[in-house]
Amino acid sequence: MSSNTFVPIPARPSPVRTSGLVPWIRTNMFADWRSSTTSLILIALVLYIVPGLFSWGVWNAVFDTDAQACQAVRGTGACWGVVAEKYRIILLGRYPFEEQWRPVVATSLMVAGLIVSCIRVFWKAWLAIMWVAIMAIFFTLMGGGVLGLSPVRTDLWGGLPLTVLLATVSIFLAFPLAIVVALGRRSNLPAIRSACIVYIELIRGVPLISVLFMASFMFPLFMPQGVTIDVLVRVVVGITLFAAAYMAEIIRGGLQAIPKGQLEAADTLGLSYWQTQRKIVLPQALAMVVPSVMNNFISIFKDTSLVTIVSMYELTGALSLALNSDVNWRPFKIEAYLFITVVYFIFCFAMSRYSLWVEKQLSASKAR
Image 1 (cartoon, rainbow, N blue to C red):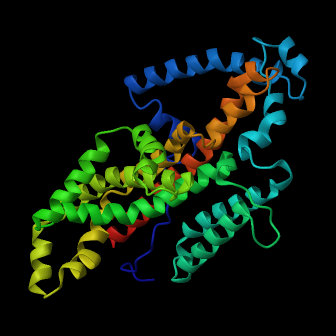
Image 2: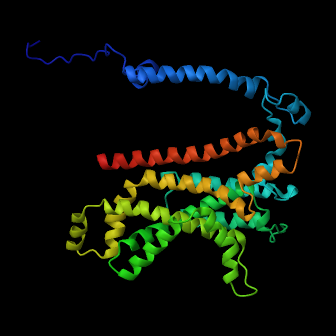
Image 3: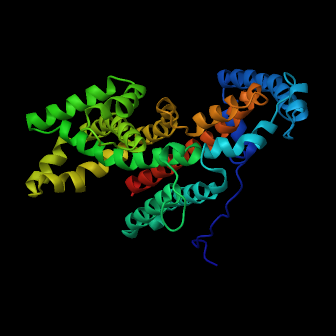
């Protein structure tokens, strides 16, 4: 064999492990003296708190629907029996007991639609048709009055179905409205720009409770006699307008980050205003503000708890309704609130993880 023949050297393992649990701990928890000190303090705090929580929440807890047994361990153990006893009211509110299969099916269908909408392979034109069908089925099941279903007034809707409905519809309506308002605030037409500024500043200057109060109690006073709008519609409109105002400012921040040279290049190519916005400006601007937009979506989901002020008992309101009407279970609100905290966390955590996935997809597209 010639001496000039190239012989590849086989890869050798790294002398120091760079993957696995131990390297991760070393890198993220004990990289220097500051992180090591912080990690040790947090570990000590966890070791101090966890045994007591385990004793209260598991070891001494009561899981049966026995109010007397819960009273016996009150202060030393949790009473998870309150969740087993009241979960149907907490999750479904005042909806008629014998018809509660309807909100279960309707909510499951809407959540399934949300999951499908988040999967990239399903981003097709038929997705809009699917959502029209989902909304039609949801309101048919919840409202009844057709197909042999008994009618149920909207003021009896509550719990998780109402929370999911308010958040989903408000997000779907607020997002396109926010884009229009953000573009309007940057318009060269004084009338449009002034109208958008007044709308944004007026809505952002008051709390959501005030908006809901106005939509539910003050707005009907300006309607002609004999004309009424369902309270659910008024609440959805109030949340939508409130969320759109905040989201418009987030989107406007993304619009301002687009270099002016790209707009000038679009003018040179002869693109119209809407072609420029649709093909060049908005895709980049929205990609920049994904974390802030998702944060707004999460806020909308949690802010639905404020509709209790207008006597609509969503998840949080239904919990108060379930416990305040029963003196035997009223002392165990902490356990019930921990239960709905888990429900809120599941939805909010899923939204945050989806936001991270979208950011990774956008980063990959930019890397190419």
